[in-house]
Length: 249
Image (cartoon, rainbow, N blue to C red; front, top):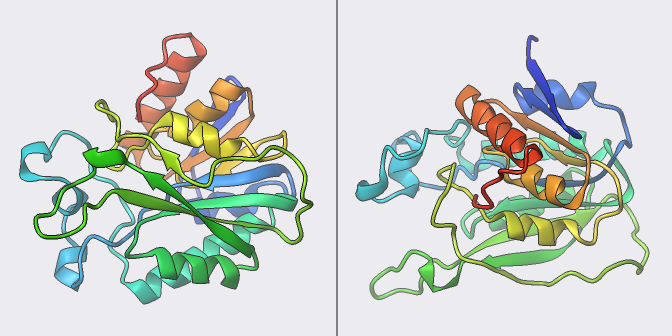
């Protein structure tokens, strides 16, 4: 399998499918896992799920602003199988007791908690990301205001180290580089209780976790299958290394 690899400061970036790269990485060489995989949740039916990601996750007024992203067309059964597969491979790369944190939304929350455990992680909890009242309003319904971080550990974990918030409150950035972009500050907060060492991100997107690692001086390994987003991530991390980073998502 051919793939591209770039080194930017203490970050190593791969353009490839995560399932091709994970088996090549050194076992037990990462302090933690922090990643934001495609949710495959933007439709109840096959035709809906097969639609472009911009039509599933953006209003008509915002379509075309960001590139489409891959891997968002799985049904729930195949999504569970896929999550279990890569989470199992990723767990072997994390130090014993290390944290694994995976973003999801409300529709895939039960599937993600099941897959984390099926892959051998010890499920420890859920940390919501409260997007504030800027979250998408729905007339006659509760506002779609939160996404979630399902987190666990690779085996037992001592009750020691920093305490991190159980809820992260931050609005969706005004300037994004990805349809599903999240704030760098949220990623920095999620890194806080992880041991010193490299962070693994198999679904890098526009490089937001990488920027958070850069900000706190952590080594980072990111993987992204889409060439367009890989280039965006490389550019953002290079700008950050040069002192010109945009702190948005």
